[in-house]
Length: 102
Image (cartoon, rainbow, N blue to C red; front, side, top):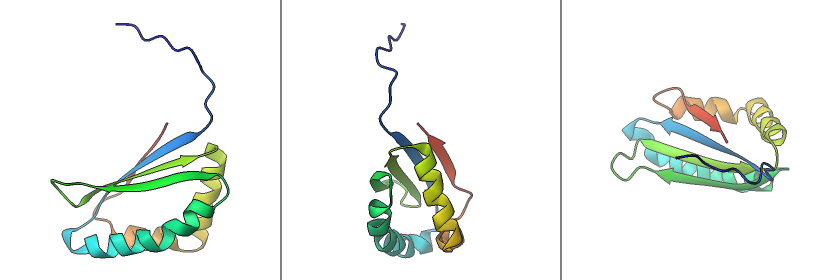
């Protein structure tokens, strides 16, 4: 089966962030994201950010972000690296996160 692409113009970029944390960190993960997501949603270029926690395995978390451009998202990542947020998230994870851009 062939797919027909009609519109090649994209208005936004999506990123999925697949993370795994230890079972003892779920409460910390929930609190942490609830604390930082309001400012993330206000950051230049952020259109949406949501979290899904696995129903069968709550150590699996998917963060879905939508940004105006990949460059604006990368500026945000630098901001979160500089302010120490990324290091704090890393301390809560059981494995290296997997990030996918669409």
